[in-house]
Length: 150
Ligand code: RB5
Image 1 (cartoon, rainbow, N blue to C red):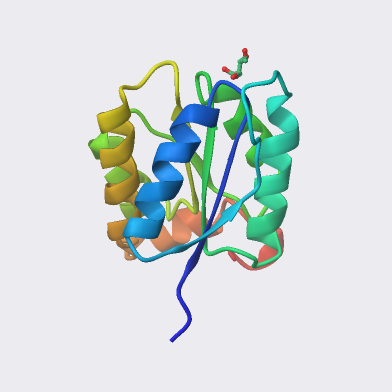
Image 2: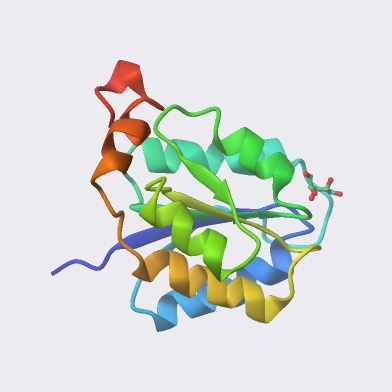
């Protein structure tokens, strides 16, 4: 069976954490679609949020991970794509609830606001938690009315 693909993207502030989380993803058995950035030189977070969002919308990856300094800018960028539900999470509870309640398909993390272990725990929780369905189906569908809730 082919392995699930997780896309990951970060700006320069998120680049060191991206390297750590990409290794964690491989350790969890995922194939990683690394969309950059590839070093510490200053770049613009909208470019990476957009690249990640396009990969999710095109079905190139099942889930995405987006990282910038606070997570705020790259989450705004990623959420401009209608098929993306990018959730800025700051602990395992928000990572879990973003999957259970919101069926989030992109985990967003702030590299300058989270400790590395918290970020790693968020990643693991996000990828091992299922959407709870039930009453949440109607609400999530209302986020994408033009797509029949997809
Ligand atoms: C880059 O300095 C910083 O502005 C960016 O990583 C992010 O925090 C924006 O929301």
